[in-house]
Image 1 (cartoon, rainbow, N blue to C red):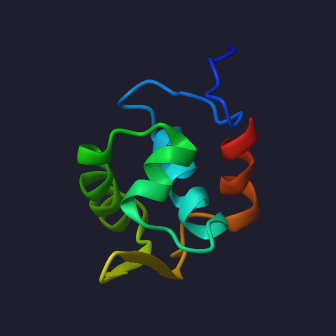
Image 2: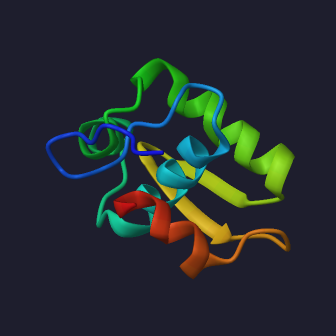
Length: 92
């Protein structure tokens, strides 16, 4: 199935699709300064949902992810997700 893409070529997966979480995690990894605004601009994810989705990444996939000031930082991708596999969903 093909999904629409935003202006940056990022697929727009349905709201409860786990791939949206993978896009979020990949964007945090990719961006030099991953702030809420920068992530939302790149991914077209709803700014109001990003913090809740970060929490889902922690709970559902064991990702160790912090927010220091405005900047998100990935400490560990956890035991479930593989970085290279997840990053494919940013430009699927």
